[in-house]
Image (cartoon, rainbow, N blue to C red):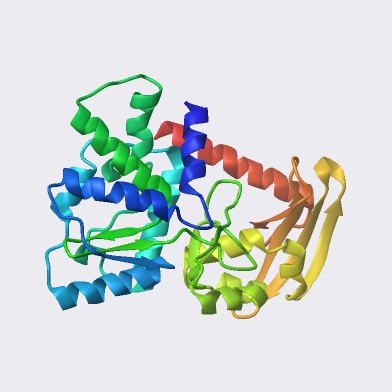
Length: 321
C-alpha cells in the first residue's frame, strides 16, 4: 500500500510540461463513453487563473450547458483518498478558486493530476489499486472508462470539459512543500505556473502577495497583532525567535544551564505592555522556542515547573471529561 500510495502522490505532484499527446488520445474516449461528440475547440492554458477566466468567458459567449452529467459518466467508477496529500490538494483547489475570484459552482471542472486521490473526485489511485494490485476485473466498458480517465488525469492539470470546447491547463512550473506535505515557501510562491501565476503559502496557509511581502520584515509586535490567526501562527513558528526578540525592549531576569538551558526575559510590546517569556531549546533540535509565563515569574526552573504543573492539571481535567 505505501509504495502504491507514493507512486500516485508522485504523479499528482508532477511539474513541467503536460503530456498533451496522452491527453489528446484519451480525452476523446471519455467523451465517447459519455455519449458526447468530442469538441473541435481544444484550448491549452498555462495556469488555472487563465483557464478559469477563459472558461467563464467562453461559457457566456456560447451559453451552453456544462458537462456535469458527462463528468459523472467519465468518472463513474473512480473514488477514495491518498492520505494527507489529497487534503492538501483540496485546500489548494479552494485557494485557487478564491484567488481567481470565481464561484466554483458556475462550472464543473476536473482536477486532472490534482484529483487522483479523492473518492468524491472518482479517485484514480483508489480504483486502480483494485485493478493493478488486487486483479479486479469488471466489464470491458467499465475498465475502458477507468483506464481512459486514469490516462487523462496522469497527463495534465485542470480541465474544463464542455459540449462545445475543452480548456485544459498545463502542469505547474514547480511545487514547494514542507516536511508535512503542505504547500510552503518563505521566499517565493509555493506553487507557480508557467505564466507566473501562483500562490503564496506558508505551511499550508495562504497569503496574498502584499501580506507575504509584509511578513518578510514584520516585527514581533506586528506579527502578534496580525489579524488572521492562522497566518499569525505560522509566522511566529517560522521566524527565528532571536530575530523577533531583537525588535523589542527586553531584560534578562534569570538564566540556567540546567535541563538544556533556559532564559527568562521580561519583554515590552508596544500596545500590549510588559510580559515574561521563557526561551529554551527543544530536546531534539537546536531550534529555540519561547513560552509566555506568569508575570510574577523570577526563576527559570520555577517557571518551567509551573508550566508542567499546568500541563498535568489540564491533562487530568481532560481525562475527567
